[in-house]
Image (cartoon, rainbow, N blue to C red; front, side, top):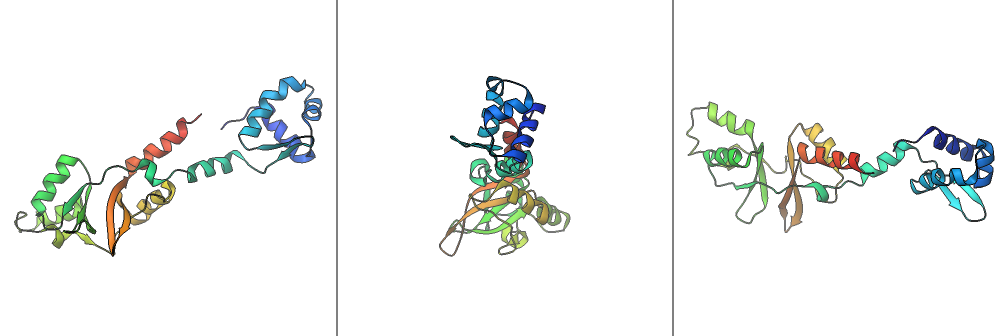
Length: 207
């Protein structure tokens, strides 16, 4: 949120002289109380100032940066995840290539017969197999995938910024969104760089 010059001056006055009334602030700025009313309302609703009846205004210690940080931390995976693209670990590498092409994704989440996550298959895994002399119709996904527990994942209540950090740290394009089921994880979504971009764009469009 961008503040105007008068709003910045109001914050400084309150920070130095709190508690202070609206009338006193108006006197410092040589304006009427009515003129200040919209600015005080904005600063109070935005969290910069706190108004106490019959006492006056107090500075909350909030800044534009801390308010932005709080808004970012409110963005959770559950609000921005997309549908997961899964494939059976018994499927062939050729089937995986076709699935990846049709769904236009960079990785597939591999599940077992019970629908639990067992691995992740990336473009690199398939390219490595294609370069070799093996027949991709004869190579099962389970042989070339990255296996649990060496897989990065997230949950629906995780923050978007934490998942963004996870993607950077693990150097991957996406992670499965999971929840615990029995002794394993059921895939309920996926978080990609695109999902994260959409989350931050939505934050920027808020008024």
